[in-house]
Length: 298
Image (cartoon, rainbow, N blue to C red; front, side, top):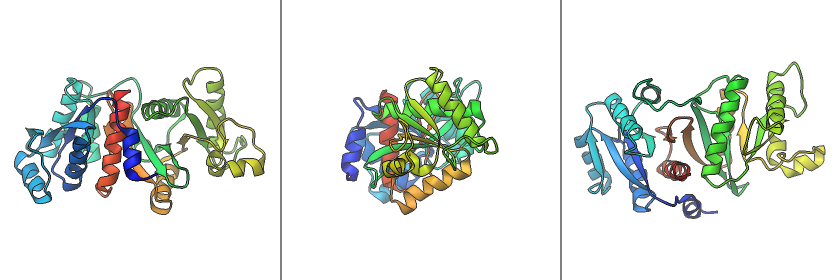
């Protein structure tokens, strides 16, 4: 599937308003302009107005129809963008040229932020050519070593993201090094508990199974060889990793080696947050915006 078809598949029913925190970045502006031209979002740019206009002029980006809210520095831009979402003047928050910690600090502010009763978790929405469909991986960027209660919230966040991009009743694979429960391997114990919670109705709108090794989660050939009986094995829509090292390495393997398209969304706040790295391409940022808009519509 080509990039244009993927983006078209993510097109929301209605345009969302996108608040960009510290929009003084050429790659961010390029992606935002493309998303606006495609009718995906209506942007509000928060940041230094002169810098934004100068960067747009150098890059040939037409931002004449965009609202710009002047902010003196990235931290105030983050607070302003968060406030726009909190006041329902925007549906999506996007990280621009601001440190992730500063943006999340504004998001988690008890009085003026976007806190909910969930935890914030990163959902990587991937389109891998070899799979021909989107999958979600969590958490490669925010939660270092989640315990069982945190994993419950990570699954709920990932399921909301999956439903938002059109994956009904997503299949959730809890990954480990092996597919059997081993008391010496905590990841397998958590996986078994999560699978049981799902069967008893404590984790809804999805099918959870684990522990599953990576090949069993995605390869139906591996499932046949190992004779594993599972509704999830070989067909996983969501991959939950045991810690940030495993998740981050797996994400980079998908993007660097397998050539997967990557969209980074933070779930668990009052609105989806587009969170990408400065090194991510304009294409990746556009895909992230499209995913977030689809989720916000849901």
